[in-house]
Image 1: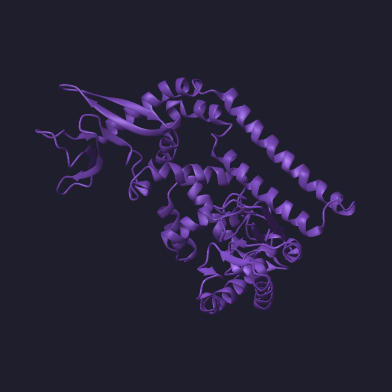
Image 2: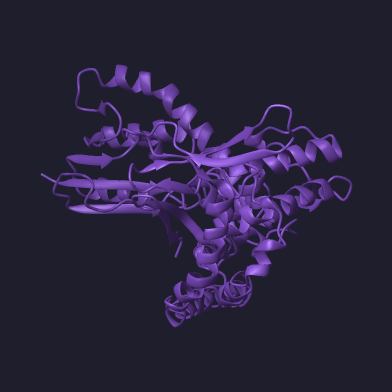
Length: 430
């Protein structure tokens, strides 16, 4: 008994399957990539030597269209080959195989139509063309590329600048509505902050990103800072991320492990207000007492100025530099390969379609490496730590500005209570 297998792979849409997927002991495996030359060889071999079974994944692999599929299938079955589609309910030795084939014809036709659409999108990706659909706000299409719309892009840039300055998504959304009367939701604002288009990259529905396809509204450094702020804010409750008080969301009671909230107390007929940190859900009995907000803030600043330089000095910067250098070297090597592709086309080593596919894969790999690079701490962390270790630096900031810098360095502040006093424990993000 002779068993053979065949697979067709469109290099634009998928990768070639493993030869061990069939679950049968295969005598010979025929595999096509982009054309069906091996399928014709398979038919010729079956004419010369009898074959019992042919395993395929799907019937549509037997041709470019329904007519080719039907002709090749009839030709194989006329030679006595039993065709088994492992991913479809079709076996030609079954008594109902003609009914099964009739039921599959419409599915095959739909799948081939879908593949043609996907092939069109894949070829557009090879040209680094924008995906179909609405153009992101701040851009317009021109000659198959995104270009900056100078009339509205300043609105988007101002939104990013506000977020970078204050680290508040809701605040940036409110700022946009107040200054430009541009009403967007918080969800839309979040999409703007994470959209690769504004960074000069193009993202596709399959999740792949090609870097440097057009001019970005923000720089790579600004994009990396935005990603750090978003990761930092993700650890906080959504409302505290834009709270007006710098300690909001950061302070915990060490005794009951609960987050403390900022409460405002006023006296009747007086304009002065008093801020306290308290835990309304404290399980202790008696409950942990509230502590004056200003006392916690002053103690926090004092400990930052004392402990932050020591914490920074404990980081292994040579190792970080080695990681960054390694990633930059890989990016450089990939870019050099891309630059060599035109010469390979001229010498006939690669055909244009294969070269485009190779360039696309290299560009997506570069995007992945740049994403890893952006996650690493900024190179100027030491100089920033020196600046924020000066007490006067904190005194000159507003509460919103303090909120930005506190969250840049601190993950959590624990209040450790003694009998009649308390102390703080700072947990830095690194």
